[in-house]
Image (spheres, rainbow, N blue to C red):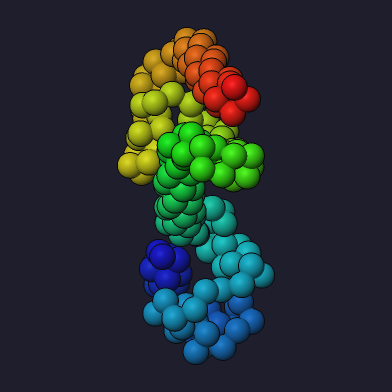
Length: 195
């Protein structure tokens, strides 16, 4: 956090002691010392008084802190995205691989287990889609750069934005093909059990 250096910089530029600054913002000298030594953080009222006293905007006063807070939020989002993506991938593979063995060994109960796995994996798929929508990432390159903690520049972003309609068409065909395969497996299973 950079607020502590900002407070000290503006206080010394105004030739104020810690005690004089404390009187002007209605806190103790020890509080000013704690702020400048990064031991604690001023409340919003004190931040407003400091920005008014230093004759700068609140944004200028805490600019570095805002950037650091944004980076921390982005790291948390990235970790959630990667965690949920890993769970989704594992569940999806488990669902696909287990459908036939579960149906063969457990009949209808096996299909129910597969259905439960499918519902849980779709829950994680919806969470991933929510992250993608919140962070405006859709294409493969955007997703990969997001998972690596990087951002695309404006030109790369424009290029990827142009690819989005084509990826939707490809995704529709892929979903149709997968649905066809799943239906064929179910038909085969039903024929196996009935005949």
